[in-house]
Figure 1 (cartoon, rainbow, N blue to C red):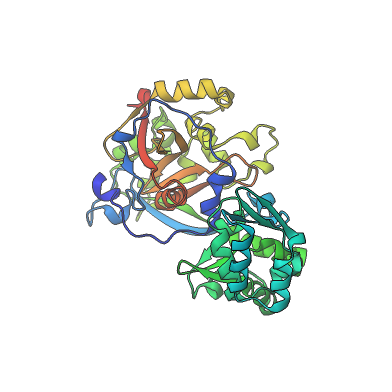
Figure 2: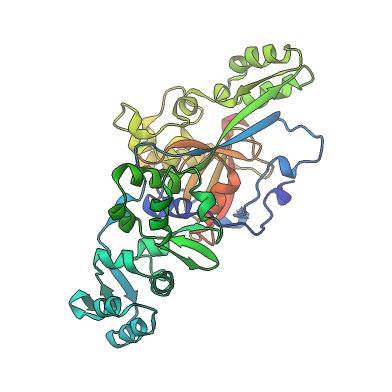
Length: 412
């Protein structure tokens, strides 16, 4: 099953939210004892209901998943500074003469070309040339001119918006913004800022959009662009359920007596009953699920990154020692062991890069879903995501990344 669960397949690369989280707020590097040769490549199809044999109920029981477009209603987003900073286009490796020839070849209006060729807006260095375009020009570019320029800018991570644009299917603009609350005229202003790249419809000019939208409209745009594919999970228990297996699965971490009364009672309901799995999570995870750090009256909340979250998962009271990098590394490498079978509740899903360093860790829950905190910034919530979404999100940045499943030694 595990080979099938981790078999690589084509997968649509998610939008900029997912490709940006690690870049803007990487998790601390740790874990030199993790060996890449024992890991499997990061692939988009983890253990899930689709990989099970028909009719077979997994140890976690029957899970119902409901997707919700999760976003912060206050208009916060993790890469705000990088998205809204004054534009400086860096043409890596370009000389002045090469840049002039390139701009002359682009489909630009005479006025736009004159502005971009005006060397008062230029700054050259041995590494390339920088153009500081006026804000008005960002709004006036045609789709084709924007595509020509931005496809070159995308070659350097210095050009953050162009390197990591929001991506949609070519025919997906209307579907993406259908429930945005933005009026047709405002949506047309956004549509004029789009361009195509690598077979996708792209949007990179959030700063320009802010200039043409009212504050409440801009917040609507942010919520739409940054909505995360988050899930509500419910466990179905019926008189026919394997109650002993369910209690053992959801009671990991010495919690069997805590979950047994509820699960046993549900099994006595005629026809069965369902419950949100948040009730079955340990206190640390249950209290934080679907919340943002900014909502907590806790000065340490913004520092609670993916590793801190994962290592505290089973704790009733959080262990603040995990803020110390040395303590964290030692605990991780001494208390967890690699496993070769399918992950179960409470196991760590850890991604490592080409240098065998971990760059993201989350907690496996059930049926292909993980509990994750994607970064340490206040705009990063604690959520339940499909493991496939999480893997592709990080794989888009770490092409050589690999995935490991680890289990707490004291939990077997």
